[in-house]
Length: 314
Ligand SMILES: NC(=O)c1ccc[n+]([C@@H]2O[C@H](COP(=O)([O-])OP(=O)(O)OC[C@H]3O[C@@H](n4cnc5c(N)ncnc54)[C@H](OP(=O)(O)O)[C@@H]3O)[C@@H](O)[C@H]2O)c1
Image (cartoon, rainbow, N blue to C red; front, side, top):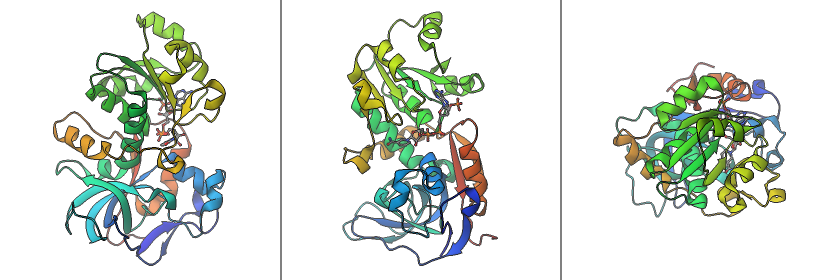
């Protein structure tokens, strides 16, 4: 099969089109012919060689943890799909990649709603899993108010919608350019950065019951002040969390219960018109280096996604 891969760590230009054996699904897994695959911060960090997990990667490595496509092979003990089904999901996370390719093996999946574009489906998996897991940990009740810090990005934009669907009021932080997006997703927008409390006061917000830090930009002290309770705060990206007594959720890789049940739930919300995966930028698979560059630089308005054609031009 063809795949975008890298043989050494470094900048986006280490990515190149190559060929390799198609992966085989093990028990509990399926293989898909990929139509779209997401590009996430973790893919970029691993490729750079700067994250400790890079050391675990055998090279060459195919990046990408999210994909959507047509089921073409089914492992043992799988009973909820048939060949030809359209699904979206997450690769086996221990492999830390494999999605930016002609074929990918999925560990968790849900059926793609017929009307969901491939681009949205391809980028959805880990963002839905992560947002679901974080909301499960925070366990906000209907009527409560949650603050999502970094609400316009891949995970944040999903967390806003899943929280809203649970009947929770959402205040989302983003740069001013993204405030309209947050309103469309159902959140009250506020600009991120220091002195958040003052800006919330100006908005007339008197109570924050829960806070989810998606950005990891150093807001934990302020989020603790706002909620008054370390157990009411979860971060996905701030590794200083233990010094604040705050929970850092790393999911399956840390042996935590995962949020895979969020995938079919989000698909159902999509069919009801209550959920979408905001897409920031779409690139053909062979332009994966440009997609990684986009992910590295600047702000987000949802996810970055690669589309996979039958015969890519190298
Ligand atoms: N622990 C886990 O299980 C897990 C899972 C998935 C991802 N993550 C991590 O979570 C982080 C976010 O992932 P993502 O996919 O959502 O990334 P992303 O799509 O790049 O979004 C990051 C968002 O952070 C916002 N941001 C930038 N500076 C900020 C600041 N000072 N305060 C608040 N927000 C700020 C940006 O907002 P604007 O666009 O409005 O500027 C952007 O939308 C990454 O570090 C990723 O590695 C962790």
